[in-house]
Length: 186
Image (cartoon, rainbow, N blue to C red; front, side, top):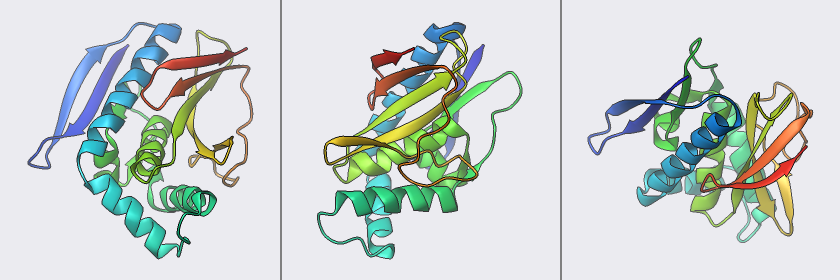
């Protein structure tokens, strides 16, 4: 399956690259690795951090309150970034900068944006993928480390709230914010 990667150039134009990814779990691994790379790239620029700081201010988050900061990031993305599925037969991922510019993306774009915003203010994030089995992962969402606990932050669910676990689809796998596999739950 082709993977389209959208990122911004220094001139703020969207650049698209096409890659072939293998089917099944190897394709999921490659896609999440690309998300990790895009998040790292966005953290080198200041736009994501500036948006995160503005979110903290707009939501009146008290100093050093990671739980309130995580909830504010979740609420802002859920309320300001539209969920739009990928084109038929094409997996797309975009940098958090592009998602901020377009204010739209699918579940992987939402996850990357939440993790980038959280990372930019010192909150660790990771990715969780789910599907009926390891060959067919179908959904990805971010988890944020608040205190000693990983909290789901799935901004693409119609209903639900911060720290509400997404319904399990059977197989689950966790990746670091860099996109490296860290745990398989079966």
